[in-house]
Image (tube, rainbow, N blue to C red; front, side):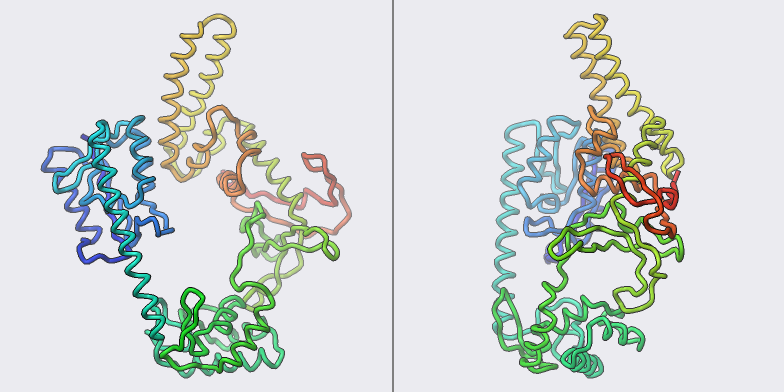
Length: 479
């Protein structure tokens, strides 16, 4: 059998868990003893499989891709919780077992779950349910422990908090002095951006040695920790560590800085070309920013060159700004035209992954064959039964090619295009993330050159007219 070994080390650091290397070695030895072929090895280090974890498992994702590509007959693990602690994930694998070559899951202590039989499926579900129960018990124990620590005013761990030594219980006086200085400046009416710039110019760093930004400074100045308060699930307890500033000053800082909205809150992305657009004057990346048109009016999205960055330091020339919609419309039109100007393999030739040329040639050939089959049916060359049989064969080959494409960095976006849709049609129904991925396959960057406003008129493909000069937009193609 063709086997895939999977190893995972949980963030819970269970005492019974071997590290990833040990798990892999055990899987390799077991596979060799059975006389099977170890075709793949996948792993995830320091990642929980619990339903309470929100951290993705890239190694597990690669395992599923290999299964979908028909390259795995058996998954080898040291124990079932290494693979699953969520029933819905097992159900997905059981579904794949019905449509791929995957037949079983086997542990290195010779327990196996035959996914082609009712009893094997039942036993696999029972094993995962046991793991789910253990995850819940572990979660409940951790919650009780953290609640007890909070009531006792103990620190909750994590990275070293600014103003305190490692462990969070002893004040680091030089950093505490900086906190108090910033507090005095804010209460005196100074702006957070000015203070951030002052700290960076003086070479003062954060607890992790990084630069200051308004967001991380606000988080520190509005935290309850520096006032000697431990917070847990919205409840406050007296802390056992010393305060850096008084509670009264902390409340005043929160009142002043909290009026700007929730610290660290991010707005959903709406800019198609974020991080791709560059200033044609100084070369710096343009930032995405909106300008409200009148009180209560709509927000006009723009790409602009910032003179001062969020750390208060000089960034770019600050001389180039352009409305986002016409720039995005122009780039979209050029990219989609390029995809349609030749077959996809020729368009992406030289993108850095030689295998993608062959796969895309095969992908396009299969899609063309499906179109030809419909034509043959319409002209009477094939009857309904022959059409159904031929389509089944071609679609199976197309799905296998799509699965292999999905394993390549440059092929994942294209492999997600439905069989019955063109790139144009997929674009209309896809989200912003997919559209950005499609553009990034072809575009290295978009350079916006300085231009005098109002000198030119341009009509976008959707019929809207803009005061916009398309000759001042340069698309730097990857291929």
